[in-house]
Length: 331
Image 1 (cartoon, rainbow, N blue to C red):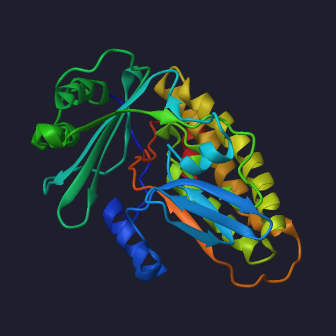
Image 2 (image 1 turned 120 degrees about the vertical axis):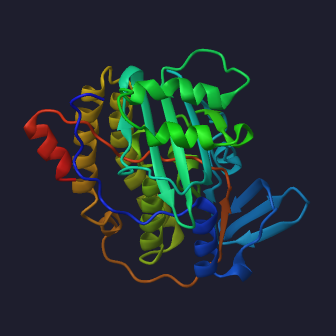
């Protein structure tokens, strides 16, 4: 875009979702990981929870953590009528991962005209990932998602120089381009039962324009783990639910404000306010709000998790006033 500058992007380690999943499985212990088991129901009692699977088998545990994605069976069992729904204002995403050894630029996302966002980032082993996100997309899909993505590229570039994102889209086989209409989870009245609790997308999946879905899900896991190390299950779930629901009321307010930002400048301003709040509020470990307590005995936990892919949009900004640019750079 003419006359646009960006502050320097921070360096970060990047890896594909399959690679991250393999690392987590290795760290957690492959013997405790079971795939191809779908949760259909659960029953709670004062001593624990029984998880029921599609094959008719069941498993007994102290706690069930529902981390099973946008269309969580654990959530809709805990709080019926909370099925995910498409983003009301319309939000579509086009993306692909492909082998690509060309120059990709600085890797910073671009905030373009007409509520279009785009990014191109490199992974290890000579691959890259590109993403085009469009807010307010209400037109019908065509038969070719690659052509749709290319049609959005002019919103992100002035056409006066080489544009690596467009080159990556052109290099992508047509059948490798994924096109999705973004869905979200409605605000729910509770996150926990007596022996069941939600974490990550099942509790708070929002449109990925805030760029924090994965990191906030990791925060959920950290807070829940810290709470479990300090108290028994009943006080743990009560404290975790109170903490997380209060925090996500604020996250949702920031996300809603960014979603309706009419211009790139207003989006960046609202994003800067969100980042400042997020960084400031995360400096204190929320689990400490439980107060002193002893370590509970080792518990058996069943983690219900999906392998659905939800892209988290990286952060990028355009220049604004000097004061706001300093505010963004401070993050």
